[in-house]
Image (cartoon, rainbow, N blue to C red; front, side, top):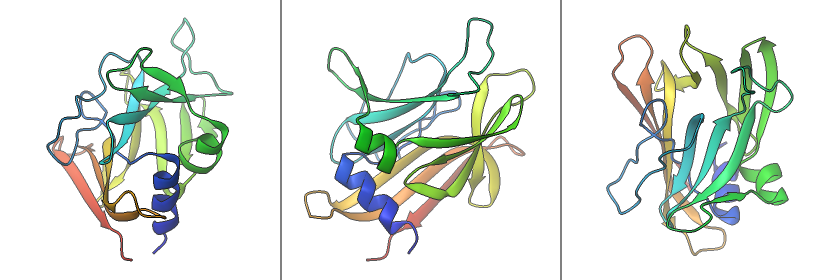
Length: 187
């Protein structure tokens, strides 16, 4: 399956996926002890996995006037729960093979975005009316604001780790109701 390389890369560099669900971010697909990412300015979404309680955060880069940085529209970094400092930059391998993003300017305030390890899922960074920037994508066939992705490993300690499924969460643009898509990974 096309998602399998994506899952292996995420596992190798130490992440799972989870996009948050506060305003336009993600909520976890399973109940556990992860507290969730809170208080990060301009947060678009975050990624988590089941073996640990760290997240990769994706934020929009804005200047003092609220305009997007066209050269680098999205900042990506680790958020480490219960650590000081909580923020840590990704290393080069993580940026290039797993969690980094590729962006393409579509209009002055809209970008096509893909996560480097999962280019099949196209995301769109844009404003909806006069609101904040958000990430939009199709979730289970519905245009949605992406709120979270969660990667569930069968065996995170295996080499390579075995991914059971990936959950995508969001909010449908048309109905305003939660949207969810589970991608089962076949071995």
